[in-house]
Image (tube, rainbow, N blue to C red; front, top):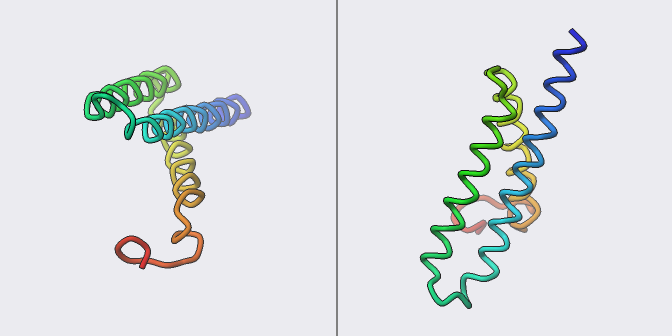
Length: 101
């Protein structure tokens, strides 16, 4: 039982790290898109690279266990929620609706 719990904890930490790397890459892309010579190509390449790496990392984390994948994916989504909360002031202030108005 302890071995299972450790496996899930490792999967959760790995999923959180994958999410942090994914959103760091997104942030990097957004910062550079305005100055890019080909912004659409930058956005497309960034998405393909980030999505491919995230899916590949989650596949490695899974190790054939669906529950481990769900734990990692849950951690990814929790990190996503935290990142959104940090970068969108309207979410912190409790405003809802279109564009936080």
